[in-house]
Length: 307
Image 1 (spheres, one colour):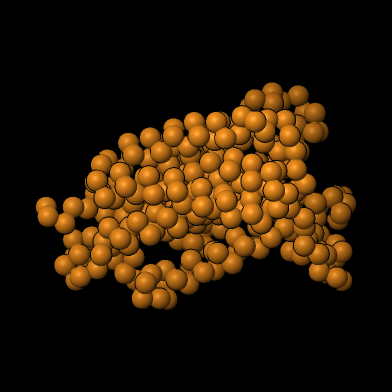
Image 2 (tube, helix red, strand yellow; image 1 turned 120 degrees about the horizontal axis):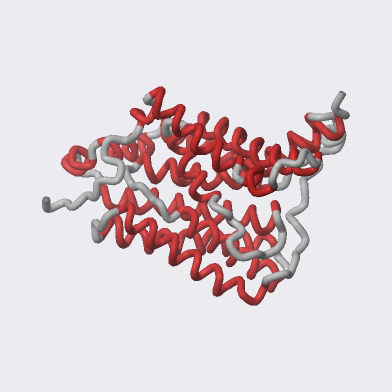
């Protein structure tokens, strides 16, 4: 029988692994609900991770590192918004270009920090609750990024479903021409949605380099930005399904690490590919179930007022 302390530690590590994906995919969900397909998430995450780590290492402040990572994600998102929203270029090509730019910038920024380490963001403790078996480390022993991701999820779910701003954003994503005819500033709304996505991607990068793996290594996002994109499809553009998807993929990521630890003789390369194989399997199932029908009608369609 699995020891309660070990079970609690494993579940806590699943939550930590899922947090990066949840933060990045929440931002992408908002951008896509506004009708903008942002394939630059991977680039924004890696830039956020690099800038956040460099700032925290240089100043000794995790808070400054986190803020710098968010600003870096927003700055790169403005590059994407300038191309895809205001110049109405192809959103797929603009997103891929943004990712390539982000990877290059992160390599340049992080070149002087390879092999260095910092103290990870500390876990918050609640007296009397953190030491509870199993649920203690899972619910009351996480770092601030984990709790921020849950609060952000609640805010996004409430904002999209219950507020006028969320209703207008969804209207822009469903029919940008009709929203424009009603007087809503479509490009401004889409830019703000993309900026929110960039901030979330930068925060996800900060969680990766300041809490989850507190050291710098090139390409440390390892495709998590692409998985975040897949999670939005998996969730059928619904925030609560996004939570389930992020924790599912987090569990798969942790599972492959423990299987390697048990020494079952399975090639490590195959185990490392498990999260990505799970992504493909989930998308195939979704396609079979036709859950992709929940996509905003104007997703990926450029908006030009004069046309």
